[in-house]
Amino acid sequence: MVIQTGRSPKEAAYMERALFHAARGLGRTSPNPLVGAIVVSADGVVVGQGYHHRAGEAHAEVNALDEAGGRARGATLYCTLEPCAHHGRTPPCVHRVLEAGIRRVVAATEDPNPIVSGRGFAFLREHGMHVEVGLGADASASLNRPFFTLMREGRPFVILKAAASLDGRIAETSGRRTFLTSAAANRHAHCVRAQVDAIAVGVGTVLADDPELTARGIFRERPLLRVIFDRRLRTPPDAKVLSTLSAGPV
Image (cartoon, rainbow, N blue to C red; front, side, top):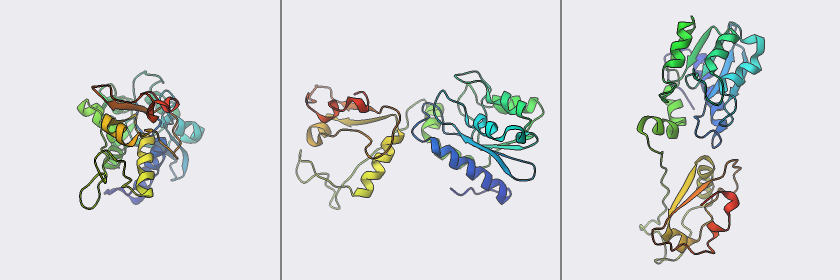
């Protein structure tokens, strides 16, 4: 992930590293965003790094500061999202940033969550912290498109998956299951399934393909919600999706 910026290459590299760590939480942090952070000493040494592992656990900034320990004093904190300033399932990150003695905070973007938006930056500045915003903003927003869509537009982020032959067909004959995607495309689809909250299909797909609607070959910690659009209750009781409830509710 390359950041286009007018800042020094070193600073861009630090933020790219924070973004790399943020992506390590893919599929595990919902409903929270993906966040990464690194702590860089005054002489340019990375002394701490961390990311948000899952909702309800320590935020990225806290994990990075824990690793840095006393070396965080006088250092710069690079984070992919605005540090929070409110009490949720965990204490405010901004308090920990101040206590650690961080001299400067470089954040990719403001948190679009109205509970947080701008408050974290304001708190830090009010307490004498030097705060810079914008380095890696587009990359951070791209990484968190589902979260940003929910916060800014009040709706889920929807990913559509479709497959067709070169002549525009989706099956050999109507109602007959036909494999159109390659092994590589199937692996990618299961990677996406491992990252989302839910997967939805129409009852026609259930009747024609009898899918399990699971994330196979990919480690997934949270149950995957499986949704079937079926107004006439035509889903067969012996459908595979109903025999794999250990993978998630239907």
